[in-house]
Length: 170
Image (cartoon, rainbow, N blue to C red; front, top):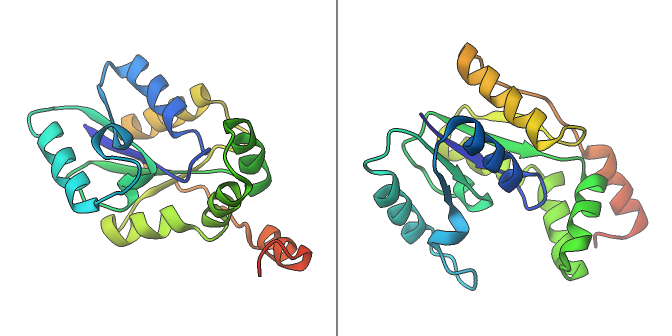
């Protein structure tokens, strides 16, 4: 079983992947370990990921960049988080305000979801807003075992409208 855990920064990818790895014993392949942060060549990321998982039976591929490349995996899971909660999760990371807003905007506009759907077709969507990493991992493992897709609808359009009204977006 090979799965991708993706989503914008702050949605819980690393924490959920860590719990999944602990529960399954599967190795984690992190996109950030495969590419240089300054410049991301998605073709190189894809090739490095393919080479890394080539002889693996099981793997968890974790990172927001994995929504940008097509890989031979069983499931693609896009983690989502309500934008105001996401903003609060990102602030302690010391990101500049511009980067926080860009990531929150990407979440409101379904960026990772739409990229993943374009690359993979059917993906899973999990809202982590009110879930711990442990609860999220359990939900994912249960769905894998039951062979049942997770699709938790999210709609951040009201928050986007509020940002427009407040002038956060020009």
